[in-house]
Amino acid sequence: MPLQGVFYDPVDKGNALTLSFGHQEIEVDHIIEAPIEIWASHSSNGQIISLEITNKTKEKTILIFKD
Image 1 (tube, rainbow, N blue to C red):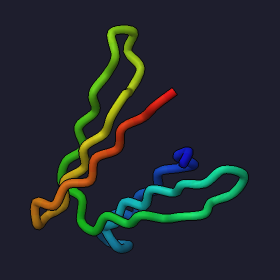
Image 2: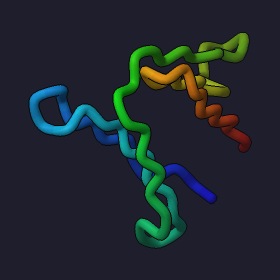
Image 3: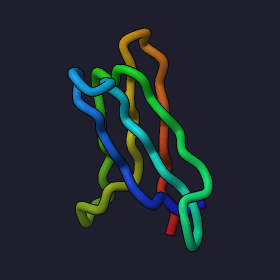
Image 4: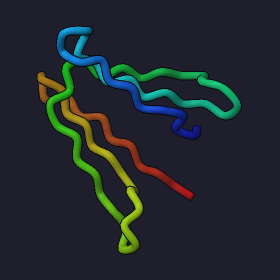
């Protein structure tokens, strides 16, 4: 499912990262509470191919992007 957007609410407004997915419109939101790290992997041409997001309890969310 295509990634539609990434939204962040700062610490004083909730401290959550929301990943929104869908085709024509947003169909699914995945909320990561209290994110502390975001790592990106890049292809040889600099395109982001994956993201790893860690929250304060060390749970990881991994996104892998495909063409």
